[in-house]
Length: 235
Image 1 (cartoon, rainbow, N blue to C red):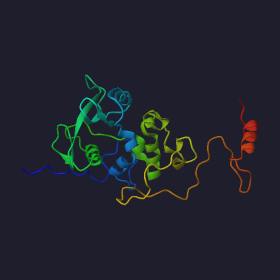
Image 2 (cartoon, one colour):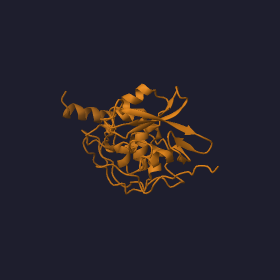
Image 3 (cartoon, rainbow, N blue to C red):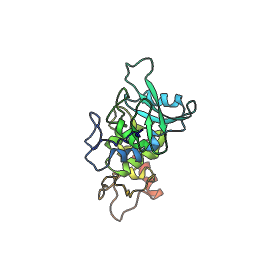
Image 4 (cartoon, rainbow, N blue to C red):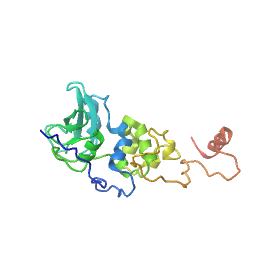
């Protein structure tokens, strides 16, 4: 009996959502998934935590966790609001030696990343396609994706993931996105999954701080900082 073929993910980038910026950068879908695994791959959470996270997310949002009941990994999928009786459903992930399959489907994939990427474009046995959070779709550099990944589980409750907000990657509460976290993954990618890097731009100044002149006192000096806030900020 012939073995099931391993299906690759569609290229170019799979089905960006309405309102998302065009993904013209050279970062593949699998590359985005690989860099942001700490966000969507949550093997340590239970079903209640998964439900709590997904209830606030749009349909198609997903998590992968480990089910103690089934003793395997499961895909948790946010359904449409009019779905009943539940708004989240789960699918067992069957892991074999060199392939992984989704419950109810005969398609096999070499890795979990390729499986997720495929179902971001083709629902197949799912009621709808998977979707990544908007900030992950909109990220244009590896550093931005690494900053998102550094948040891990906290990403889902962060201002970066706020619905209907104009907050984007530059609003992580630091002078630049790359300062938000030390890289969780190497910047060099021998597989070519990363896109071009942004460089040569002056990092934005933190809100509320005055510009500094060349050769002048630095705001990093504690006395200068205290004097500035005493004279400019009213409590």
